[in-house]
Image 1: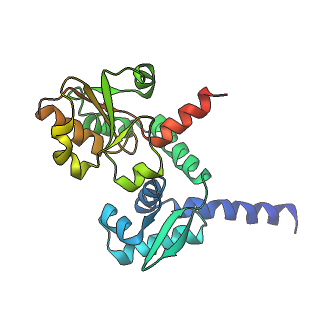
Image 2: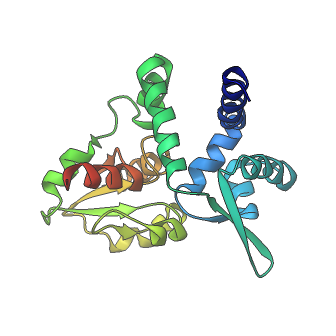
Image 3: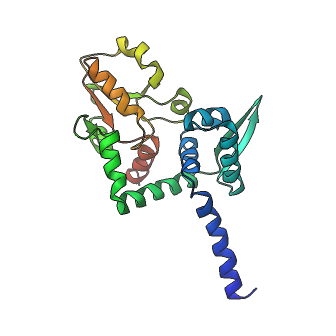
Length: 219
């Protein structure tokens, strides 16, 4: 093999990853799997895709070795092949935020609701983390909470919020978070809590942002 053949071959291998990431639905599947392992049925429901389509996209991710799977009883459970796939997703989002103004405009209007909702940055929460003036709720599905969550968070999945609301203290600020800056669950939770008379705010972070923060501040 000469130098040109080597370069052609190696860049072709790199491009395989790029090709498989060119699908919005495959990026969404990876994002969901970065929260916790999930069944094909669960991923199909989350992404509003048919089982056949979901399986097809998962097969493409499997071929590129970005995911792996195991069988549990009658279910096939998918997970990220390694933690570096999460880093890849982070990098993609960071570049999109830096280079494409529409990304931030969309998030401002849809997730942050402009100025209508109070949004806390991760650093703001860290400063008040040990105070007892607030409670932190994780509104993701229970399995994702069990897979990893922010320190001191209480698990109240979005679909159970109505049942739990009478147990929440009205004399404390309720801070809600979900899967990160692009997840709408926390926005919906805060809107609902505010309508019910709670002092509520959305945390602009999820488990990956928290892990990254800890990594940068413990060295």
